[in-house]
Length: 413
Length: 113
Image (tube, rainbow over all chains, first blue to last red; front, side):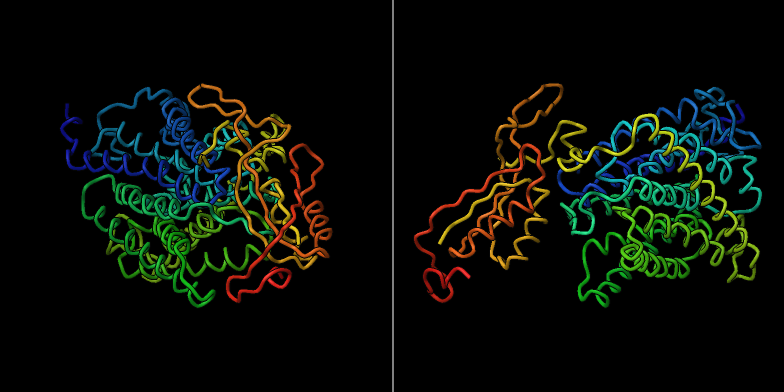
């Protein structure tokens, strides 16, 4: 009875709303952001992959994912105590969130687990078999996402105990998915016809998706306060600020570099800004957010527009270039700009007199990169041996919409 | 003067363009079209209902050339578009009685190049 009384209706309302906002990020947000960037013969394959992640990972999370990621266990992962939500009730679980029902924390986190494997889609777009994607993603969610989420956010997680700051998923979501993206992009190989231009088929979709991502990201970051309080307001403002600075910065860079600012540039920059501010959103102030936003566009622009073509890998929709690189910058920037003035429960960063925090962030980033890289590679190889990952050349040429789903997105007549 | 119409696979367009540029054929009109030859189209399924015989996406090129460019243009299209598999397409060569360049009013062979 005492527990029930501790539930705060305002906090509960806000986290319920935030959960819905984060769901919107995957479908239709990310789906349309990525969907607009592929050729029209593959747009359904992208929407399908995003939609099925919402279905499959939602179930995986309820059945065992939540237990593996957040179970109260000091070890590799959270263990099996909360399988099938056994023991996850409607009263608060104080170690995670003291003023909302435990099941609300669980379903809020479910939406993070859904979007993370969906982010990787951008790396192997237009050439992966749907069956292989499904198997790969389930294994990846279980053996890569769940352990890393446990290390960073779970009770007894060693990165959490080390003092690593990750407010809303810079390491768990973005670096993790970004590294998985570069691994899969390299091992699956380039798309057929790589080298000639493969222009986006519908940039209005991409802008629509970017807007929905920005909108949903308020739930992602401000929701991660797990309460309707001042910290949530700070997270909301710095999220908007970093995204604004990054979107503008990308446009300015293009203006100088290519002579014209572009819609795709603003969309990409805005998303990169959202990625970068994610781990920092509960620890930094607005002025720091501007610097984080400006910095991420500069770094990602160099990566995507200069380094990628030189290196010649086909990270088709820049899942690594934006999420991986932006996430690394964001996690490190958290170690630079974090301030106890913003969040007393956090820590001071390098620029606020505490260089040790930067070193902790660097360690957490390196550990995430190393683990994600190795296990993603293993899972990919396993799926390849079992059922084969890449679509046949003929299927790729016809397009995955027709060959994998027997549908066409657009009629001509 | 001849009008060359070619129906090719969409993904061969880039290669065909490259081959045409090599032969200095720079003026082409490109259309997205639907159709099928011997392959009899593709099967699509909507809400469990199978629809077979749907038309395939193809690309249609139209190129107007003077006589000395006819064979090089045909060779370039064949080289760029041939995969050896069913559905590589067709080339039609038609006589072209008149050509007028709108800007200058030039007629015939002058107006083509």
